[in-house]
Image 1 (cartoon, rainbow, N blue to C red):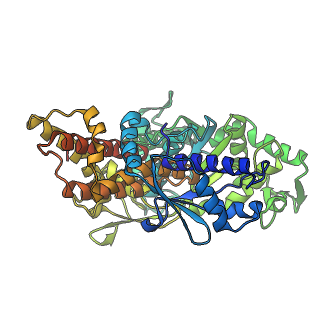
Image 2: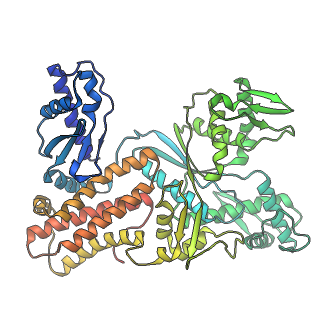
Image 3: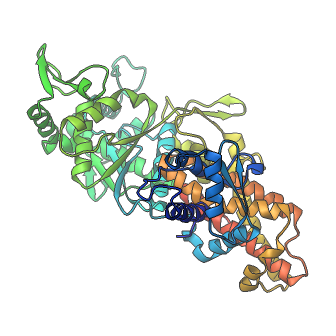
Length: 566
């Protein structure tokens, strides 16, 4: 856990404010508002800037620029700070000394894989739910985007000190499961899409034939320790249903494993009904006084909690609307110790979010407002040769995740699906993902990591022994602009990890890694690393190795490999 440069500046400001309280410039009991310390967009405005004086001027009963000068005068001396200046209406701009950037390089080496991690989550348990696909067919590309977003959010939250539990919610109840069973039964009886007897709502993909054949062979399917065996009986619809669900759950699990996505728990929607949790939730909502009956249906007053209109919970035929088990499921998360919950969904689920949150608040059982946090992703368009790829021969109506992994590779698929903000439309260009060029961002970043590994191999071939201690001691020799820019980029990594965790935006890691790789490649081309001067060579290798470490740390948060050669 390293000290961020921003934290160092915050500590200096706090000491300056203490001095102003002691001098009477600020009231002794004054509660300091949350001031901002940020990196200005314009480098001329310093390396860091704060609005502290502007927020404190009223309490000090003085002009913000006057208070800014008083605060600057009260700041303790620090070797990390070169100059401090006042700008505009009272911003305080800090210009860091080269020693500050050099120390960040040493910090990277000292922390290693822990560089960038922090304890802001304080070990609080957060449940992260993602993918949660219906077990009715192979995973499609949208599931892939959900998988990598959820997996990366979980990794980033863990890096921010949260105790993360990863969960997959199987929607294994309802009409779609019945359609799966009917589809498999039809295939088992020799029917196929297009036949007059083919069920209207059946799934048409070739994978249904695979399921039916496996069932008729009497194959055994194991899912999480539970074995379901097929049998040569096309009339036993219940047996077909159980087998088909198990078969496709296993297939989905295998696809996710190939994608580098895993879970700590698989939760079945059907268990909520079997264990009476849905009925218990409805009873609790009724007891809390937030329901009423109208037109033979049971309604929830979701308008009491910000929804635009009340919602039906139980229809007049006695069946529940689809948001009710979602309320019961998220209640179970709270009861299972998830003090925070993050649910990753496709944007098409947007309509149910307000009513689920309203239902949880209506239970009045201590669940905090805003529980759970939702992260929604938009659709993915896959392109090849300038044309959209829509169909899979096996799935019939959509492109499967396995198809995409087979074509583009796991690393590229994960990168491209996480690289943009979730709520933005995503175009996945297979040709670009497969290319070995600087235009391919994952190749560009991985090549930077491999390039450092190559430097070490070349050093060994030339008989150069690397002295890490000497390299750390000679960092002052790296006074050229490309080296300074690379060190600045390295120092940003902890801030990016913290921001990604705070906003649940793992794509920020991908954006940062591309910028770091660019700074590295620029420096690499401007500075020969394996020079004969031992001091300079060790210093440059030290910087290169620090870059390799940060690249590896960031790639790990994305679940993308850090190759040693390419």
